[in-house]
Length: 276
Image (cartoon, rainbow, N blue to C red; front, side, top):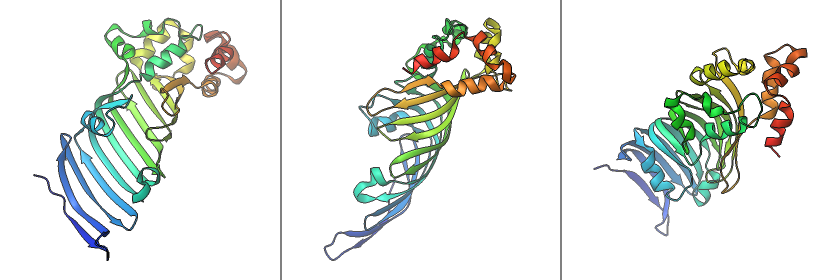
């Protein structure tokens, strides 16, 4: 059986004045969790290291009624956190690094949402689903964002997670970016959705002028903003200004607007209408 060892110091009222949690390792959630930390007055510190945890079991315990859930295996977790005992959720600060594999974010499909918005841009996204090889269509049509790997580098700042960098990848796409997340609240992320050659080659074959959006690795790159307000849904939308800049960068300056217009006549107006 796993054991947790701690040293306590009591005040004159026999209430804990300080607690020192000695390094302890627990077998939990199908993996291993190592903890140490302490309590001094109202100040809490904790260091957590984990490997092989089942994210489904963690979500079932921490957010049983949540609309969005994460499945998969938490391959590694390193967190060094501090905060006030009386308001830990809104005061917690410190770095977090995590990596997960073979899972999904249920309740939202980023790729599906972006394809639906691209489908409103004439010439570039008509019947976008038809570009997807048959064996991969279930990934696009599902209600989850599936991943083979997910890596996160974040810093908690007074209860808000500042996402320094995250990457979510599978065979069809790579989603990466930065931003902020308030646990249980708002999400504000600036990202790039890269459609890998598995998708990009079929898109360019159908619409050669989509080459304007290719990077040096032959991925089609779509800038995407991801937003959530309060209890509302997670919404992913193509980023108008960054998409236009990307097209301009990949064409001669004078020909940029003409080239983009050939890919999607009235691109600016069509994109702007998405955000109205």
